[in-house]
Length: 219
Image (cartoon, rainbow, N blue to C red):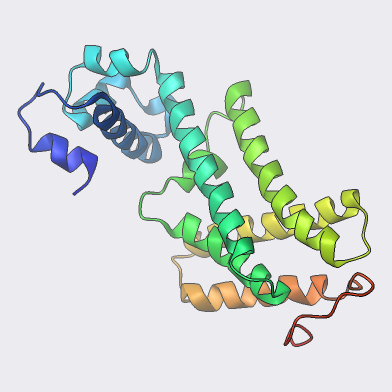
């Protein structure tokens, strides 16, 4: 049961622990923002969706922007964490590429549609929103670039550029895949894009003295 469903089962105005109420409000806001976008969404809509009065909503979030930014922080952090976990899950570089692609496809395919807040926001002209999205993009690329830099002779700047390319490829293709109705099974889509990325990355020389992971010479 979600926080919203649980709250809807309570009488209107029933008290919740502050942390639970905050999560409930964030869940309601996410549904409204994903469905309507920032500009069309109203605090009245969010309060109604959460089953609370507007004053209760304002007790937790002073305005619509603050509510949106709290959601953005949550979902940007989730993306970065998923990429970190993907890279930490194995030491095989080919599998790391596939795991990174999988992380992006899973993130985009989530039923919540929360990726739209990060990648398709209608509020990118707002500096606070842009800063958070750019930070998540930079952190994601930094995580991937560390692996590239460790395993090749490439300097930091070049490793970071390649990493940005890998993350951009994953993000854009995952969104395109979803927009086409996910005609290709997710696992097959991940395999195709991971293969494309790996074919490019494996062409760079391994760091002297390091062994190529077993099986990594294969496409």
